[in-house]
Length: 316
Ligand code: CP
Ligand code: NVA
Image (cartoon, rainbow, N blue to C red; front, side, top):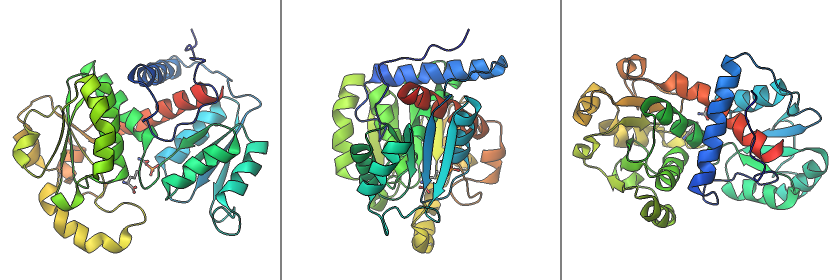
């Protein structure tokens, strides 16, 4: 039987998870799991017939673009890829004007780029659902795939201990902090003080964590990885920060995920996660990412079903 699509999200945007209740995030997750099962059964559905989505990419992408493009196309919809080589966004044409034009032509917009403000403006001015495919501040579709991978491995989310080691102020770390706070996952950021997440995002997460019972810890003390169910890392140099490579690598070298760190977790069931792409030998050693604790390929596969779930809930 085809997955049941919740109807109450139709027309909304996903800019980050701040505006979504934990029960709603759980509905997206349940839908993604159902869509993965549908695919395994070989079911074909055409729930986007007559629909179009604009995929705006200011930054490069493999997983996110391919998930949106194949996920939308397989369901009978027409995705249109627009890079900064193709459109005038933010240059000759303002974000507001681009939004108003795309809003007249498309069913929805996905945006990957630099400024969070731009994805917010697209949502404000287009009048159609807008999905954040990564900005400097947030990567919400990634965070949903990450908790889906935790759910698949542990059968539950509440009370798990997720450790993020590395650049604690980047988009992936901030999104994980937010979704963990909402879903009751104990979340530790292990990073140098210089790269602690800003106090604003910490303040945003605080009431969500109090409500869900999640414990949020930010530290530069490796002993706090003890008991981790999952250790997660991301590149040391995010897109747009290439000029900082040398100083970042020096600062983050002690925060590399390697076998020694995994051993410090002291949990035989501890898994390794990474949003990818990975720079092996920098944020993670080749033996850890290629080893049997690594769930990174499942995690990448789950991008497709979580993105499809988000699109179906917001657009279909
Ligand atoms: N994890 C992720 O967003 O991958 P891409 O940059 O390839 O889309
Ligand atoms: N933090 C990384 C994530 C890539 C998926 C970046 O922004 O480049």
